Image 1 (cartoon, rainbow, N blue to C red):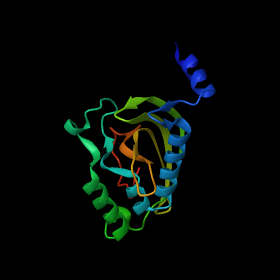
Image 2: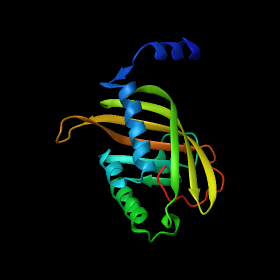
Image 3: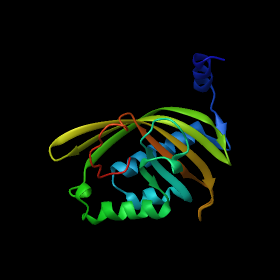
Length: 178
């Protein structure tokens, strides 16, 4: 089966991997984008599993992020510390906070993993700060799982890897989460 046939198949069927449909995953990722643009970092933290990883690698290839140099490699404690810095206003990169609008598209289910789904999408982020507008583009992969919550099962982030298209170039200070 070639790429075009797979695209046609995905367009006409609703793929579901480990009980998470493409529609559910897409809605979850749109919610995450909205929370980040709205700087609702507490709600963003609640989207994660305890063992989740947030990674922005420098290299565009490879999956072993623990043994490579990364812009960001956050576990739960580091995500919480990063959010605290963003909310405190004491960080140079977060004061004043940047206004962002992101668009996510081109969703593709890549497969299943330990009780969840692995998918990839494209993200375009526009930042406005200091009378300047900047644009970032990235391929973003997600590992989503069903997690237990007080209100029943919910989708949760187990891993998010943001592969910036310019990751091997000089990066400016980012006062927001990708």
